[in-house]
Structures are given as C-alpha cells and as structure tokens.
Length: 124
Length: 250
Image 1 (cartoon, rainbow over the protein chains, first blue to last red):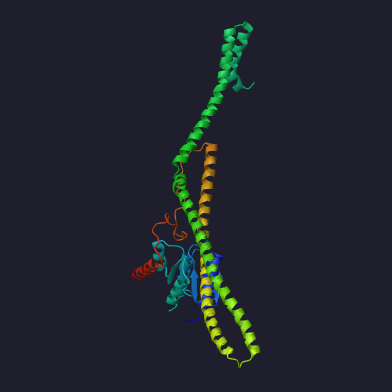
Image 2 (image 1 turned 30 degrees about the vertical axis):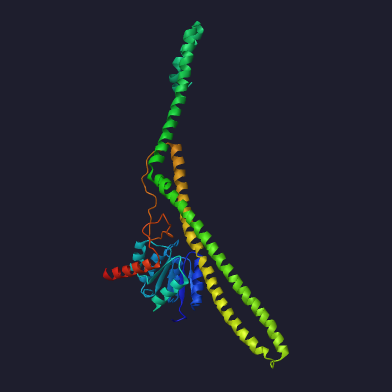
C-alpha cells in the first residue's frame, strides 16, 4: 500500500475525526486532513487532490450521502475511493449508498481491524 | 346616557323608580331582581364562552395527530434513546478503565525491571568485563528486553482500544441531538396549544410531524426502537455487494 496517500476525513464530531486520524497514522498514513461536514469538504476536495475520502453520513449542513453524490457527479472527483464510516444502519440506506457509488461502508462502533481491512480492499 | 345603555337598562330603571316613588315594595324588589338577573347573564355568557374554548382546546389536544404521536411514540422513544446513551457512556468508561488498569502493571513491571538492570549494569561496569557476571547479566537483559517488547505491544494495543472507546461521544452525541430536536418539537406544539386555547381557535391541524428522512441520516440504531437495521459488519458487506450489483443492473 502506498503510504503517501492523501486522506480527507469528514465527520461532525471532532472526537471521531481524531480517532480515525490516529488509526490512519497507526496504519502508516500521515497525510490526513479533516472537515466537519459535506459543505466544508466539497470545496476542499475540489481545490486539492485527495486520494481517499472517508465520510460520516449523518452531519448537519451537507450529509455524507449528498457529499458522495456530489463527488460522483463531479468529473474531476468521480473516481476517488469513498469509504462511508457511519452509525446509519438501515438496510435501505446501505443499498442506497452502494447505488450512489460508495466503495466501502463501515458501521460504527467499529474496530481498528475492520477499518484497516476495508481500506485495504478499496485501495487494492 | 348612550342610546344602547338606554335601550338595555332604561326600562328596568324606570320600573325601579316608579315602584320606589309609589311605595310598591313588591314591584321595587321585582325590578331589583330583574336588574341583577341582567347583570348575571353577562357573567354566565362569559363563563360559557370560556368553557367552550377550554373544551375545544382539550378536544384538539386529544385529536391532534402530532401531539398524539409525540406523547404516544416519540416520548417513550426519547426515554429509550437516553437510556441507550447512559449504557454507551457507562460501557465506554468501564472499557477505558479496564484497559488502563490492565496496562498499569505492565508499565510498572517494565519500569521497575529497567531501573534494577540499570543499577546492575553500573555495578558490573565497575567490576570489570573480565568477571563472568556480565554474560549472565546479558542473558537476563535479553529476557528483560523480550518481556518489555511484549508488554509494550500489549500497552500499545490497549491504548488503541482506549482511543476507540472514545467513539461513544460521537454515537451518544448523535442520539442526544435527536432528543433535543424532539423536545423542541414538543415545546412548539405545547406553545401552539396554549396560544390556540387563549384565542379560542379550535381548528384541527393534520400536518404530520417531520417525517423520517433517511437520506439526511437517522443516527445510531437504538435497541428496542429502531427497525430494519443491519446486524453487524458482515450484514453490511453483503448489502453493499447487493447494492453495487443492483447499480450495475439499473
């Protein structure tokens, strides 16, 4: 796995962003930036070149599903791997996220091992 | 005296004056009775109107689907949500303390052994390297470093777990946010009810409470409250694969 990949972590809870950032550091990924919702994340994605997007679903402003749809409809961002890391657990939500083009879906609470496995899968 | 006042009270006042001047006691008290009766009728009318307004407000309270839903479903759900928050914070606190407690003896053992070896090494250096002791010391040092390495790995794993346990803040925060929204809805509904009963407006409002919009997110599943949720990460992986397959078809 390339360790110089650039990550954008989007979650409205700073504690969760910190947890994900620490886990990514532990996996050897040091280049991690943060945003607190889709509205903040989208201009960052458009302005800089990120390699991976990890996003929560339930956020004020722009939710993760809307961010995912916006990313997939932007030709410059359409190919970026997106991992949804969320407590949203309704079956139809997961199917909807898949249809919207999510690459991985991890349900909270999660373990460091599950995050590592899913990342490895979407980056393969 | 205005025309209305004259029309309303004039006749009875004339009867009263005439009975007084004529010394007609029966006629006088009959006029007084008529006068107080007219006055009381006004009070009764006001009371009747107030009664009607109160009844309308109570009917509205009973019939309003939004209030019924708030009282019947949303409030018990809110209690279940807060119970779940309590469990989450309790579990996270205990998990964190368990991990810290299991890490402390490992760190203490490594630190104590390192201090003892440091003292022994200093002593061995002053004895000189020709003594057989340094070889034996090196063997024990090797064991110590192996143990320190294993303990260090365990402590590192525990620290990652401590970090993960803090995820409760995100989950409980999302749940509390939903309860706050519910309390705000209830507050608005009650304020509206109070206002309506004051104004006597008793129309029934059928606008539903904000319907659940899963595209904005529903928050963490609550045991005993949420329905149609997945059962673990494996379930998620299967659904995701299914969703991707469906996307390919459509």
